[in-house]
Length: 399
Figure: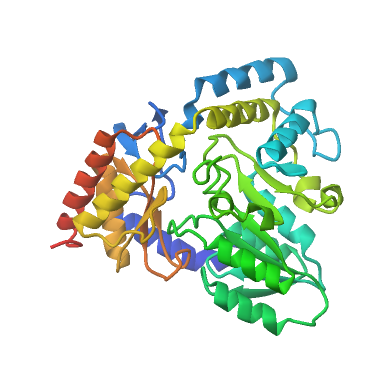
């Protein structure tokens, strides 16, 4: 009998090589204890956390913790049902009203994860007569949403409005709607999308625009609404999707829109209809974290100051770091061996970052992906830079 696991033989071989090369599984790291938003215990060592996406440090908000405890005591720990069955409690609607109001939008849908927000909205919106135009570097959730849809999928060059315009012009006169999907900040590289230019293409070609602000919500814009707000074109965006698991430090996803048909999406969106809804304690913690984010805009200022400090420091060291300044700072390496060795040595020296490997990386080169927090101190960032420089020289990445 054929083994159902035979298809994973390549993965098994690659993973075995990674473990053999570095002595540990880079995808199995356990944070044994959370000391603070910026420090955790890994392998019995206090370790600086530079790979958690906890941009505002709100996962450790004591107000959010208290709100979660109170909600669990009042409502229980789960809903046991989907949003269209018994899984909508008053807290869920309160959060949707709060998110819609924060974005100045007519309506909001809340999902159980950010992944499901993209999966659900894209697959529900794009039907078999429609076209999905995706940035080539789109997140897996966007590509999976396109697969679940029955639309025709067209990729355009990363962050290239001209290439998008050319591809949309070729579709001129064809039946069906055209939905363009881009991200605000790209999670692997930290690249920031030229959303104003994409919005101009959208207007000219009479298409729809969805922006995934997962890594830019709470980070960029006067009110922390993301790249579309910062670019002054938020009202040109038909749908804004995102997650609570980054800046707000909880879990869940959302989509906001001014289109009055959003309630039709609720009953045509399989990842919304057939998944248990978020538990009350998560909803309460998310609403409290959102209030904190709004009450403390200085967190965004500190976050970007910290991002500039890490970004500039990595460039001064001589490493091939991200071109644009954002809370995601990626160091690109030339070989798999360099990446694995550096990642392991960084962890051993007390700095945790993400190891990103081909084919998940945009140009098939390995990345050491860092994410910065508002709560990192200058001393912690400087310590991480010191370790990066030492390890890079040790691994012959720098002369």
